[in-house]
Every structure is written in structure tokens, then in C-alpha cells.
Image (cartoon, rainbow, N blue to C red; front, side, top):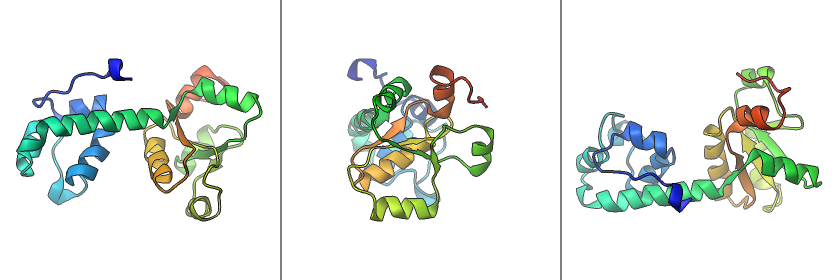
Length: 181
């Protein structure tokens, strides 16, 4: 992953940075409390440097860039490629496949055997499931499910993974009978 990382410059807009590194939103909030609410928010046209200056963190520009890179490395480690999941399932491994999309999306397309995440299921996962349960989360493109993966992994479900590219990539690479939308 290190060789693939694209350089972040302080004069890049937040939109440019978030397109390259979606995890930057979480990294900036966790480390600097930037971007989580209206009082600590920013505009997508603001540069990283402007955002840090606005939040009295001008001296942290270089560290913020490193924090974004580290967050991207952590996110990458939480991903599973569609082909790797398929191979694991074909080899007989047991994975709980959790769909974090909205119910209307499941009416369009779903991965067979998946479970729609609900409040009740989330509570069961956190309170009753063994912490080493193999879980893969998915959504349409893998962004929302990455947030869910991070949340549940952070709450002790150590084998939580995100399906890279979501159901869209699964349909494209593994099961073309699943409609793409």
C-alpha cells in the first residue's frame, strides 16, 4: 500500500483529499476534532492548510498528512477483496455477511446469505457474538460498510472486514446475476 499512496499537499482541497483518502474525514475528527459537527466543520473547497489554521492547528499540517496516510493503511488492512472472500467461502470458511445498505437497496440486489444490519442485529453482534467471528460488511460501493467495519472492529470484533468495492464489485467480478445499480 505504501508505494500506491498519492502525495497529499497542504494546498489540496478537502474534496481532493477525501476523494483520494475517504478515511481522512475520520482521521481528522479522531485526532483533531475537525469535521464532526457544524462548529468544527469545513468546506470541501477549503485546503487542508486552511482547515488546520481555522481550527488553531496550523503547526500540525505535516502530522495531519501522516495521520491521513496512517488512517488509509488501517482502512486497507480492514478490506477483503471480492475474490479472496469467494475463495474463503468456497473453501468452507464460515463468514457472517452483513449488508449495511438501506432496505430499498436490498430489494434491488443482494448477496445470497447476507443479513441486513438492524439495531437488533448490531446489539447481538456486540453483546453475544464471539469476538473472533468472521464478519464481512458490504454496501453499494464499500464506503458506508467501511465505516461499519471500523466501528465493529473498534468494539472488539477482531475479524471484521469490509468487502472492497461493495456489492457493485461483487456483482461485476463474482456473481454477474446480481443486478448492478
